Length: 257
Image 1 (cartoon, rainbow, N blue to C red):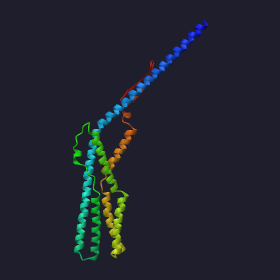
Image 2: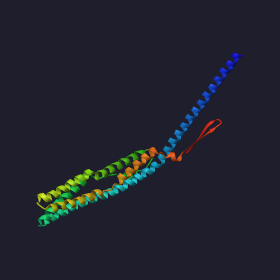
Image 3: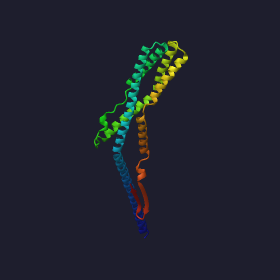
């Protein structure tokens, strides 16, 4: 009898352990299946969201590039024209007048505007081919077009950043200071005359610098912030609902998206 009881107890323990092991295995399998479904759902949702918004992003990029190109072209050609006309006009006045001080001022002014025109020519604006605006979208070239537009946006933003950088302010400042020193020392004029020359030229160059459009720079900043936001705060977190409850047969999970 004692041997039978020991035998039955051993059988009971083995069966119980096997049952618990099976339950743990089923629970582990359930968790694995649920996790797989969850990851697939997340990936699918994210991919569909990106596909739905990619065309919109490309159209927005087209509009941004078009506006930036138009505004930058107006700014670039306007200042090139103003500097060119200023150079010709001041040179003409210098050649016509007999007033020594005026002649000196006109020659210095013509030299300054000539430098401004040369600087515009040496820093050409980023050109975007017109064909990029008329490109039709399809699954094959959509990513390529998007990357090309981002590249153009980055180049335009870099051009605008350089136009307002401290190096540009310093370069124009040195040129303006040189003109003031020539007026004051080389032409043997008063310090006030040199200061007036410096103030006028500085006002003109600073107006040119701060009037430069920065549409691409602002757009690229917004785009970067959007990418970071999507990376750390995925859209599916706001649209997917996960619930869990315990039942007699185990746990039940529900995923709504």
